Length: 62
Image 1 (tube, rainbow, N blue to C red):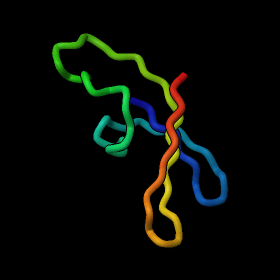
Image 2 (tube, rainbow, N blue to C red; image 1 turned 135 degrees about the vertical axis):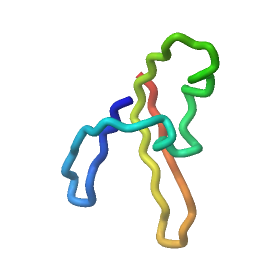
Image 3 (cartoon, one colour; image 1 turned 90 degrees about the horizontal axis):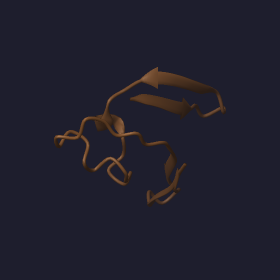
């Protein structure tokens, strides 16, 4: 798995990662590791906490 991240100043980088790095709210890889030879999934997932600590996210699959 490759994970792209943005820093606080908008800088972007790619890094190798694992499925455990995905937030719990992410959907699309539920069958990963269950006798499935491979799963291809691409998405943009952005999550945040507002000033009161409330969690929010948006996922776009493509």
